[in-house]
Image 1 (cartoon, one colour):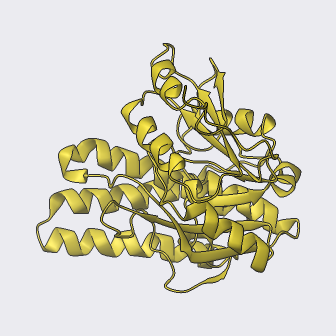
Image 2: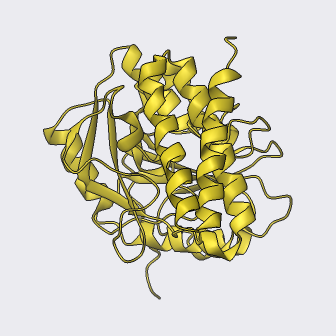
Length: 294
């Protein structure tokens, strides 16, 4: 009779918290990538916001391969799920995979090496598509410390690793930001949390050797939906920059770039890209103007 697979009983170094709604095939890709990790000191906490049991057969396929905790939640919102999962995490470090992201086999090994050799409270890395192209963020071209000045070019939420103590001291993600929040602020929760951590004395490092994969959005598939999404993301950016007291001079480039894009794309007769640039400009202004301190 074959032996049952044995799990590492050492407390996890890293707790990975995946908040998920409406995805199942994609979750299988994430789980499969975790099976291939070259480091086994981790756990996965799945915060399942689906009204049905679609994930049960998928999670059952991975039972015994690494520690998985399945938490059902009727409360919706990406960051509400992240915060809920973090309350159940046993690891010294927290990572928040998207439910359609996945990681290279050396990801956790690379992270563990960074923790051992370059002490910090936060580590961040890059987002790549399946072909290895950087997506979603214009990342800085070199390793650097995370700062207020570069924070929009060194972070993507599902490749940010927090010391658990640092995350909890800062209060976790603001669940009124991000996807499913029910507010106009559809992005910026990662920057908001890291800025709060930095203000409390935390040290953050961006390392290009740390990266994960994500499907690349295809804006031409549904241009109207893509433009609406960019408008929501841009509102979040303007809101977060105003919340953290960036000066208007610091904010101004965030307006000039899409304004220039609108002009160039209009002249070159690229109406969809012109509409996207205008949506980004309008969204950032809306977020900046409509921030109200709590």
